[in-house]
Length: 518
Image (cartoon, rainbow, N blue to C red):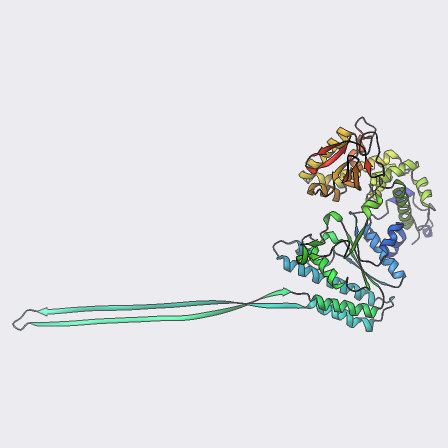
């Protein structure tokens, strides 16, 4: 119901900001479509029918992107099936149970994935508002259902044989003699022999059920279904990284063999880059899919929205995103544009820019920080101090808890802060490309460290590439306006440039092989 339809004045902007949902899956498809913000050239890649991997950390908008693609497919009268891997299977925890053999866990995952496809297609076909002929498509869906139910029982026979034998022999004798006028001798004897024995054989048959998915049968069922549909079918797979990494190559291989060969299917997979494993093994023994050849991997939301990569683009995106979310909870009442929203909600443009910088390119973090700031501001406009205090509060609530529970990550973070902010007065550092470190990856996953640039080099080493890593705004927000605040990006009193090189000297960054610019 409209807020204005109640005969009351709409709530203040700060009150409305508290009503914005932080997670896309809590919005219905109509709201998701209404709050989606165009990503320019990236949008064209998302609607390209090629099979694609969409990378981005938690909160960067992967689910929103999937909803956008599904909405665009519906407008073109194409079918879209969205699969959330967090929800497949009635007993999905078993995927990570190391006590269950890997082959069984992998097969159960594939079986549950087929079931999710089956249910998604069935929902589309039986939708009363849909355009698909149920009588023609139901038999094709049933074929897929048969593949789900197929269970192969391989009998193993265990034979037990037991044998017992035994014998008993008793021998005895006696002699009796008597001296008499007529001598006599009496000899008596006794003999006894007993032999007993038995032989038995016991056969025990035990059947061990093993779930088996017939890839050929699934492939044919999917092909027949696509032929009957007669148009493009989008399979949109969200939350890929919730599947244990050891099982991901099996699911990737299954998707490659059953869906990729048919040109009428387009598969998009949303994943966290540092927590994804699409292939394992080498050569003919490998399983999974190869990024770049089997599926494109050219969309990374982390790269697109980072402030340092393109401040203008980042500010424009967050302005439009927050404006659309505000409209969705106010039924269109209030500011008429993104610029009107900024003027109505913030004391100055710089306050909004500070919010964008504090969010570090993560839309969910931007919404959380803004809601905390709006609560602190009450009926006033949001100011830079409100943003800074809210960013510190959000960091301590959401991110610092992870650090405190992971000693290795905490030691690494404290060391980086000491070396980067304390010694260099900088916010970022370089790590040689290809360096792998579990603690570093975990800090990245939890949005405590961010990758500002993936390719950077120094003039002294033009052929050596580095990644530019930056500290989260919350790591140094309480140092702003103090003598310890960082004054530059990669080095003191200087910001990063976009030419891909830096003329500065370097110092080795311990076990990570990183480089500081001095």
